[in-house]
Image (cartoon, rainbow, N blue to C red):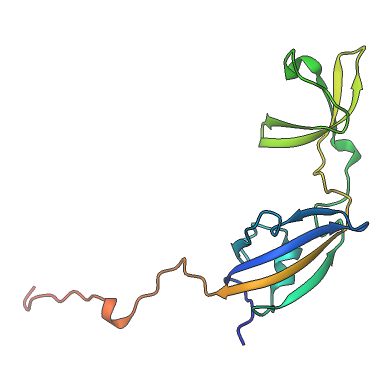
Length: 166
């Protein structure tokens, strides 16, 4: 029976929930499983580690601590920004999410508070799931060997012969 190893390409469905049972993400709701190569660090490391050893058709539930998932909340990640940076028609909603472009690329932030008098908004730059323990139900659909490195066979190997006397 084939089991997941580092380097395998896998296809799986998952449902992610918080401790209170609230679903925060699901490949089922998108009607499309996710595919990735195990060990390439495209997903949470603890999630990738959880699929190691799984077999096709197997379903398992794994619990990740906040530290294993998106880390603990960092209260120093609150940033004060002038309201003018958002444009004149921007609708500021406390708890709403804004997308921006920073020195390290695009980011999402939550509007934590408004300081109307100072014309400032306080943004929470933490990942939305920071500080949360997460539970994933994972259903392994397919496991395939890594095909990113071409394999050569004896019939594909070429040799160069030199003429005598050269």
